[in-house]
Image (cartoon, rainbow, N blue to C red; front, top):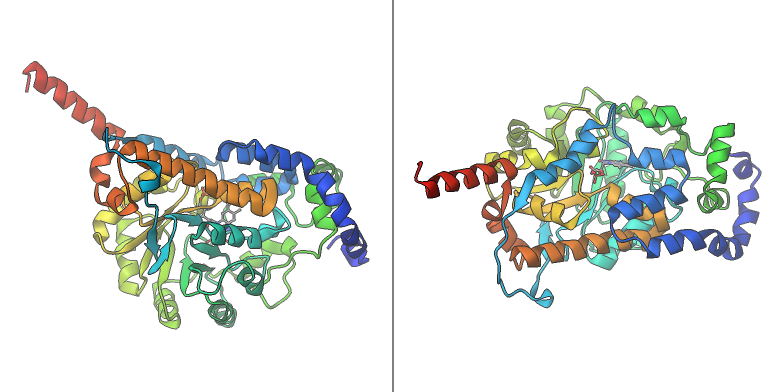
Length: 431
Ligand SMILES: Cc1cc2nc3c(=O)[nH]c(=O)nc-3n(C[C@H](O)[C@H](O)[C@H](O)COP(=O)(O)O)c2cc1C
């Protein structure tokens, strides 16, 4: 905790916030208003945030190959559109179902840790944006906002999923589950790609701690981000709101290393599925055999994810493994996909290739870092408008239609090239 918080000076500074915040946020609001796409939101977030917090948000593990491939893999799929489908914007229908609940959009904000370090509005901003767009909200067990704080933003009964880590301490697990249940979370997601903490070298290089240490580098970083720094010093310090023992946000990596249980196995997973009365997703599968095994263990939803390229470097791009997983489990099992989405066309491809819903992590966190609730709403807006445009141009009116005709409409570049070559030979009479 900084000396400002220890001395209670943040309370005095907080009283000045109504006058100071608008001045400090004027530039970031202007930048946000001009953002056209998710890449622009990333630039806006980088400009407003402390560099080491931006680094934590933005980075992947090791050489960040998986981080890049997650995104690049969408470009491997092409859209074989139908012309003259007669679709005007008002006829499109983006509604879908996830965890047995109706949602207005087939994509949503994934659970992510420590949102108050990106912007003081934190998880509440993402929850408010989910309410605004009528879509699923995912809360991390490493949230810096309490379940009560989330409930203030989401109407009772709003579809939401609670993310759980494989903690060593079963009491801690049960305690977190009880809080989630009390808070009206009916769906659970167990993250299984995080039994060890990924090697995030940008964080090590940046000396990532919350709050920043008083080293010349961190002080310079804080001075370069006055709006972010003002929020930090004029508000209560963050902590992990769902962990009853007092874990300061600065000790994330050491807490996780102490509490995460690398020995957690399929038998533990079965136990967990029995503990929870409702849908349970396994978050982090990338293999068809694990997907089938998860269904045998009692999971109801498969969440194809590699933690946004932040864990095992060299993991396959999630959209590349999705078709094989869908083929292995058949059409009726619910599948969520996340990783590398930056565009509405990426969401469209994910749905066509077998996902029932698509999660986004960094895209909405860029919005959050760029401008709190307004930024997250903007991120989801951008993706929604892009998805609508893509559906209109592709010639599909509904998400259900996109899923049903996906195989024909979205094809891997290799197979398109083979088809084209086959057709050339056919027309030349060689075949
Ligand atoms: C800053 C950050 C924090 C994250 N924290 C969590 C978390 O607490 N629990 C979890 O299951 N996944 C977490 N994730 C992973 C996301 O839920 C999601 O799988 C991933 O971000 C999707 O990839 P994308 O960022 O490319 O969209 C985090 C991701 C980021 C970027």
